[in-house]
Image (cartoon, rainbow, N blue to C red; front, side, top):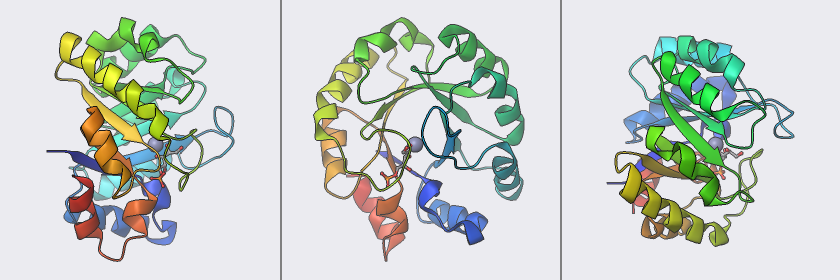
Length: 215
Ligand code: DX5
Ligand code: ZN
């Protein structure tokens, strides 16, 4: 069964806790927490203190933390302490990849590696056996509500092949422009975790939308 991880970047921040609880009650298995530093991407979102508050209110939720930041290594410990379940950082960041994987694992978190649309899947191969999740971006990171890049699907298929051969327990997530139509392409290409921000939070019937996104 496909896992849906709503991106809370599209939530109403005046009632963020309630908006998180609502999608969990509606059948989401993860909460996708988009951290942006205004450097790795041209936008700033939220960071450690907001996660800490959410985790305090909802300690049992799975926090799928997507770090769109240039220096994830220094934040492995603060995000772990704030309640991250999984820390998902970019292969294109400025820190040493192996050191960052080791630091996140040492904090007791699951670890994911994310690639931007311009990055080839081969670049992930050296790390694949150590990962709990691979995230393929289907938009340029930085903003919600962008158009899905269907030309990323061959890359998802290639990575599905790597995962099946090297680390079958690893999850394969797609993020950006996922909606009722494009979710099928992702699932058919081998993804098993789908991030959806606008599609979920703009829906009039959120439980039905989450069900639909599962394919
Ligand atoms: C983009 C973020 C995404 C985004 C998804 O930089 O990583 O998680 O919030 O939003 P939608 O589903 O609206 O494309
Ligand atoms: Zn994201």
